[in-house]
Length: 141
Image 1 (cartoon, rainbow, N blue to C red):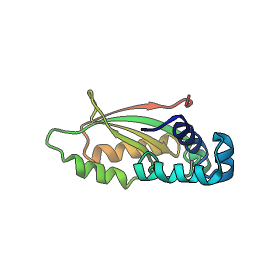
Image 2 (cartoon, rainbow, N blue to C red):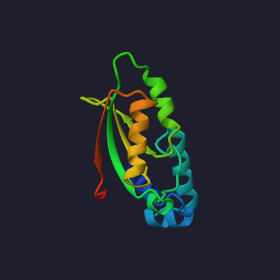
Image 3 (cartoon, rainbow, N blue to C red):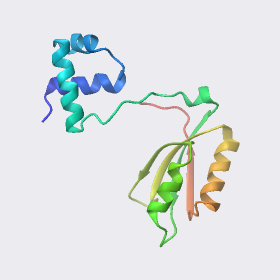
Image 4 (tube, helix red, strand yellow):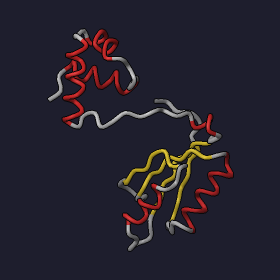
C-alpha cells in the first residue's frame, strides 16, 4: 500500500522526474536518504516503472496532433498490427479499447499532409477496416 508521502513522491516525480534527492526530500519533509529509499521501494514495487523526457512535438516539426480510432477487419492478428504500429514514430500513444473502435491512437504529425500519410498507411499497409480522426485543438491536461 502507498501512504500519503508515497503518493506525494509519485506526483512530484510525474512532473519532475529529474528532481534531486535533496529537493524531493525537502518537498515531502524527509531526509534525502529516506526519500531515496522510498523511491527505490516504489520502483521495486512497480509503482514507478521508469522515467522519460517530455518532448515538444512542434519543436520537432510535428505541429498536428490527432486522435485516430481504428477498427481492424475480422480475423486480423492484433499482435501483428500492434508490432507494425510500434514502428511508426508519429505514434505518441496507442491503446486497445472497448467500443466500436479496436484501438485509439494519438499521433503527432508534420501538418495535415503528415496525418494524411499516416492514415493512408493505416488503410493500405496496416490493413485497417475503418478509421475516424479528430484534430486536437488544444490539450487540457
